[in-house]
Length: 246
Image 1 (cartoon, rainbow, N blue to C red):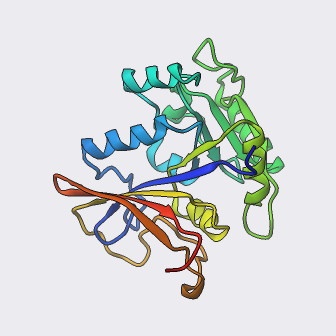
Image 2 (image 1 turned 90 degrees about the vertical axis):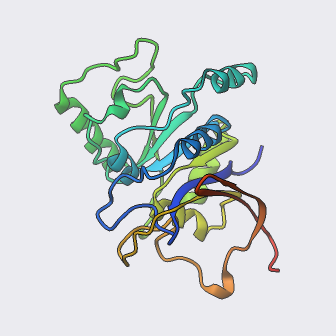
C-alpha cells in the first residue's frame, strides 16, 4: 500500500487566478460543463477533502448525482458516494448546514479540542440522529479522525498516511486555498485540474487555489501539461506533477 493517497486538486478559477472574491463569496461561476467535469473527478475518488472554509462558503458537499457515474462506482466495487472529509482544527462548523442532510458518508478531520467543540455544537443543535436511516452517523459525522498539529498546521504526512491505511487510494481535494497550499508545501499534489472561467475579480485579498506560505521560485513544483481543452468560453487544463525541473 502507498504511504499516502494519490491526490487530485480540482478548481474553477477566474482568468486572473482567483477562486472567489475578497469577501469569500461562493465560487459558483463555472458553467454546467464545469460542474459535470467536477462531478466526474469526484466520482473517481475514494474520498473528497475540503476545508471548513469551503464548507462555510458552499454549505454543501459535492456528491455524485449522475446515475451513470454512480453505477460505474458500484460496478467497480465502490460505495455509491465517496466519503466527504471536512478538515477543521477548531471544529467550529454549523450543524445547520445542508451538508448534514446530504446522503453521503461524512468524516471530520480535527483535533481533540475541535472534536469537543463539534460534539458540543451538535448536542446543542438538538439533532440526535442522522436523517438518513442507513447512515452510521450519530453526531453528524460517521467518523471523527484526530490529526496531529504542528506549530501552525496539521501534520499532513501523518494524516495522509492514516488515510491510506483507511483504504483511501484516490483523494480529490476541492479547496480551499490554505488547505491546498499545505499540500503543495509537502509536494503531495499529483494531479491538478483547473477550469479557467471568463471573468476577472482582482484584489490582493481574493483567495487563490494555493495560499499560505507557498514555495520559493527556485524550489517551485513543476508540472507536465497532460491536456488542454476549450469548451465554450472555458478552458479545461489538466496538469500532472513533474519530479524533475525542466
